[in-house]
Length: 153
Image 1 (cartoon, rainbow, N blue to C red):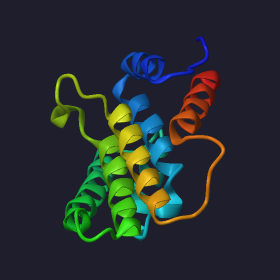
Image 2: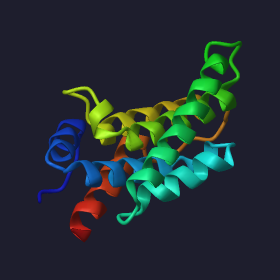
Image 3: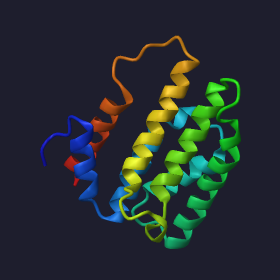
Image 4: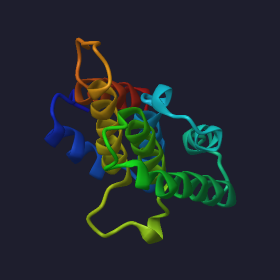
């Protein structure tokens, strides 16, 4: 597989994945922003999403935990610039996106892509509350994650 260097290449590569591999790669994108997350249940949901041998019931429980937390924290979005709370919300949304059951995903929706975008939103929110400057963007970091994922087979 050629090296992914932009969003179009990433989206094309994600579309070619089966649902289980979409989930696992989406979870890797979410795992990359785990440091912005406050909830332990969502942390465990990421661990479940990353497991190739996770049972359907485990995946459903993990999805519910992440989705429930993302829904509860949604009200923090839009408040007077509580950027860390918004970053926390978007991490949970990334995990929920990665774990979205195939039957619930919209026809044109790719769980891994949605997880990638939600993770980017988390990073953007965190940057609003920080003076740190990063050398690489979240998108570039995701290209590296995807390239390593595909190289591992």
